Amino acid sequence: GPSFGPFQGPLANALFLRAERVAGRCTTHFVSVAHALTRQYLAAGIGHPAQYTRILSGFPLDPFLRARNDPELRRSLGLAPEHVVAGVLARLCPLKGHEDLLAMGPDLVRACPSLRFLLVGDGPWRSRLQERARTLGLSDRFVFAGLVPPERVPALLGAMDFLVHLSRREGLARSLSQALCAGRPVVACDCDGASEVCLEGETGFLVQPGNLSQCAERILRLARDPDLRLRLGRNGRELVRQRFSVETMLEELRALYRRLTPEC
Image 1 (cartoon, rainbow, N blue to C red):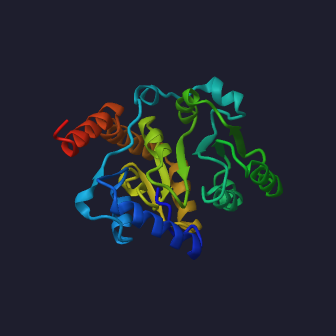
Image 2 (tube, one colour):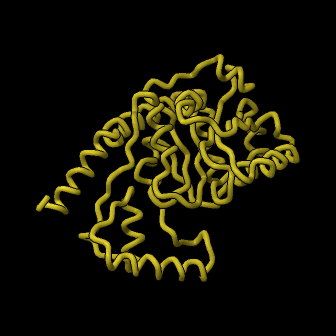
C-alpha cells in the first residue's frame, strides 16, 4: 500500500510524498499489486504510466481450495453448527476496522442471534478490543483466535461462513483473495485495491469506509442467505483460481524482468 494517504496527518504525508517522488526519479519500473495503487501514485506525481505494471500477489492456492468447514475445529473455538460465522483475518491494530465491527456488534446480534465473529490475528490492540467486547456484553459473540502459523489459515477460513474486511489502509489485502479461494464471500471497505477482487454482487459486497449502516446491512444479508453465500463464494473461488496462482505471478515477473533487461 502507499506510504501516504488520508490515514495520517499532513506532515507525514508531505515527508513521504517527497521521498516517494525523489525515489521515483531514479526508479526504472514500478510493480503494483492493484490498478488502484498505480492511479494513486500517478495522481501524486510519482512516475508516468509506462513505468507501471500490475502483477497480482499470488500464493499457493491448493491449501485454500481444499478448505472445508470442520465441525471439530469450530467446536474447539466455541462455535456451534447452527452459528453463522463472520471472520476477520487481520492484525489487531488501528485502521483494520475491528472497532467498526464492535460498534455494529450489538445491533447485528440482535438482528441475527446466531451470528458469531471469529477474529484471527494478534497485535497491540488485542486487550483493548477484548475489553470493548466485554463492555458491550459481546464476549460470547467475539472469538479471538490469536496469531496462528500460516499453515492454519486455510482451516480457519474454512470455519468461517464469510469474511469481513473493514481496513482503511491496504494495497490489495491478501486475506480477501485467500477467503475467496476458500469459497468464502467477502464484505470489504472500498479501499485501495479491494474492488479488484471484491466484485460488487459477484464475489461479495463493497462498503464505503465509515458507513456502518451500509456495512451492517451487507453483513446481515450474507448472514441470512446461505444460497447467496454459496453463489458468491463459488464466483470468488473461480476468480482467484484464474488470477492469483503463485505460478502466474512468477511468470509475469519473469516476463517483466526480461523486457526491462533485454541485454541479459
